[in-house]
Length: 205
Image 1 (cartoon, helix red, strand yellow):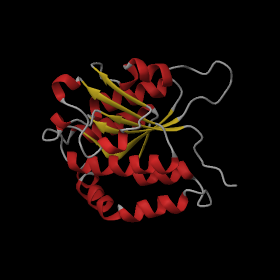
Image 2 (cartoon, one colour):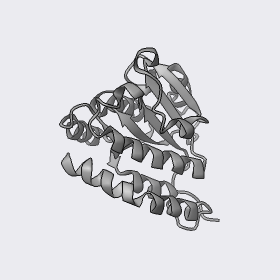
Image 3 (cartoon, one colour):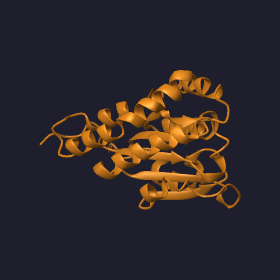
Image 4 (tube, helix red, strand yellow):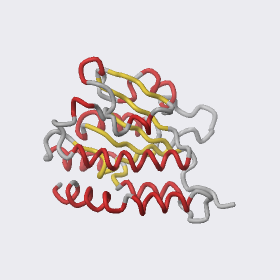
């Protein structure tokens, strides 16, 4: 039987909250990408980690994503900017390998803001030995100009900056895996949204 390319994938959803809806550039496009990636996670049973930033003041996760994160492995509130500083996240993803096992994972990040929480989370994951993928069509900031600067910094640090579709297919690695047909259906169903996101979000950074 064909094996997936990624053995320990995870998806981090960073601070996609109601209060940011009107503040973040192209926030609606980021939601579309997050929905696609989270649906992919359901098909392949990939662990999902969700954080909110000071939810008491900034609100919970946006309603469009709530059904897709209801069974998340971790759903934590935080005041620190890096998701890795939330105790539950640190306990699960913050330990270095001590016995030679391949415990490190392939972590994809979507959410906000590119130059703050996403960057700090990605660098913390990288420092702990994870392979980190920031999905360029799934992250944003209040000011559009911050995004390319953040992505350039992350590339230079060794983070993989890619697209959601690129990560989906790299995660699978083989069209012979049992879930491929369902993923292909998902990609087809979201293709119109994907084109809009790539044009409106990536086309301007």
